[in-house]
Image 1 (cartoon, helix red, strand yellow):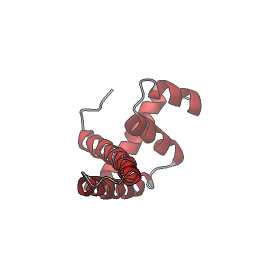
Image 2 (spheres, rainbow, N blue to C red):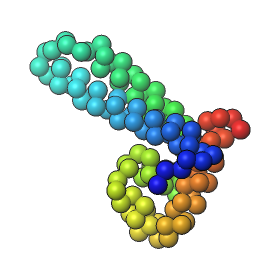
Image 3 (cartoon, rainbow, N blue to C red):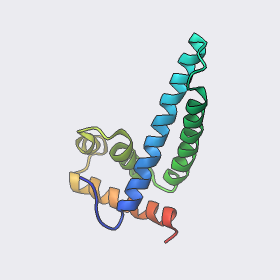
Image 4 (cartoon, rainbow, N blue to C red):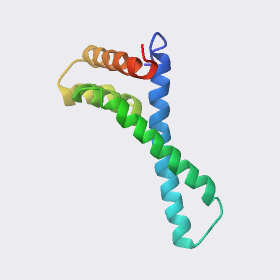
Length: 119
């Protein structure tokens, strides 16, 4: 369930960082294949994707460092992994109810929003 209220911009920002990291990782793998087969096609674009992925990883690490362990686990599962059963898996892992997962998520988004927007 997506939050379309107060923290929607923060959710989009964090989701974008996770996606940037994933794109960078995919670009690194593609570069490794180009190296393996001696191809030069698309190398510049892939290098740019890798750099952007590294930058996204740096920003994401900084943002997540302001969260405690449970908040980080929740944000990582809900925005990073985005599996169909993320909430249920978190409930089992953390030994809490769904409502608690969403409270932790909102608390984390509040912290991240303050960091991202400076408010």
